[in-house]
Length: 209
Image (spheres, rainbow, N blue to C red):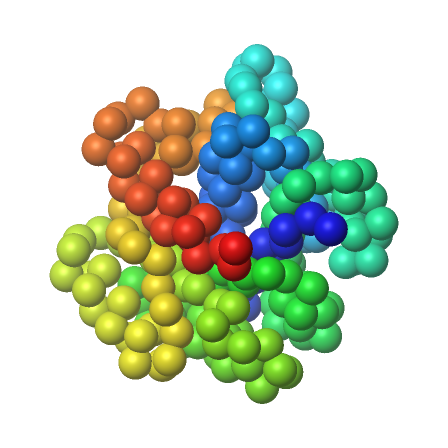
């Protein structure tokens, strides 16, 4: 039975796919067999990124497949050690089913209340559906300053949810890296790479043993 990590959000643009990719790459780097299940069939951005990564000859390159639903993704796990679900940008019965199947649910959020409030709504809806809050972790992304990060962390913590250490700053370098098939943990700037590694490692450390 693979370890399952779900990336869920009520809206797009909060780095759900960005964090999915970095998690998959770093877990694969540790020697695990990792698959990204792209459940957002309308976009399929993970499939495009995977193609770019293969074209660039980067290693490791986790497998990526587009799936119409959770059942199809689970049926095609193909012996993977870890499944990373990049869920659709919505909250419905399918996203609840994804969360229930996962060992850890990651909810990314930016600094704006327009990002934080939907993140909390998603988390609350999952808890109401029977998913323990301890199985949920938020991750801060697209943050401009430490002050923004502190305020966002406080908002999520006050709502009752733990938050991964550090944050992904708002930087064009992360977009450039992903445009060439890299993960944000593979960006060339050492400071930005360290920031991304801190967030991703904190999420990995939150996985149940």
